[in-house]
Image (cartoon, rainbow over all chains, first blue to last red):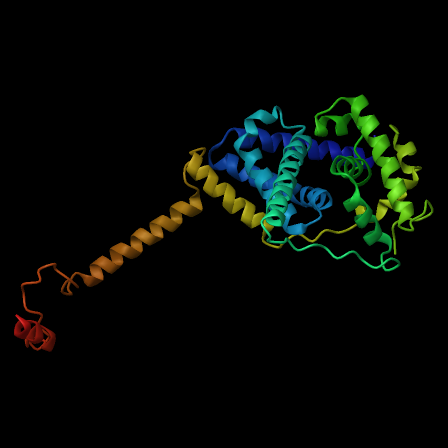
Length: 199
Length: 105
């Protein structure tokens, strides 16, 4: 077992202990859950920033995800999969948040109140990280979602399928299509296979 | 696409390296905000008794009220609700305002 794998195991055991305490409720349970917030807030907000493209939206959804998780902590089982369970909650909330934002934008457009639009950067000015974020932002949302889970979160297919609540073969097919769409858009915008995303 | 080696040899994986290494600065008070919301939700949903901090705060407020009450015990009430009594100033004189009202009547 590698050093990293040992660290992961220890983290999982600690999560499990905290989840058990949190499920016991009371003040002790609340303090245990607050420790879970400290341990998981950074990766959760980062994931949501990549899914939603906005830090403030990401923080709002992350906060909501923690509250939902707190209220339903008994459903987390033995707690060893807390991170994965929280990721599923956050992914559902992000999906709903994005849908609501789109509905709002469509309503505003129909009623004449124009939502501010992002200005497309002039070709050639976008490089590295910005290019990558721009390409991700242009992908259809299910593709963006699976690309982030695979290449930022580095989840195996089995875990991606669990988060997206689809079968493994459906996840493989979606990832394959997302890769093709990503490659097409990335190359169209001047990116190439030799890039590392660094400017 | 299942093994770690295969993932790391993938060119798209290399392109995404910059996002994996990106340090995301979340708002400094994010954790405190979440904990504050959880505290409120927990109290409202009755999933725990009031937190020690909330209890201490309420005790402090109660103590403050008792102290204020004791301090004011020797003072006349601000308003005894009896409008028939003429308002007198500390020197025992009827105020000009009351005089005006009497004249109007």
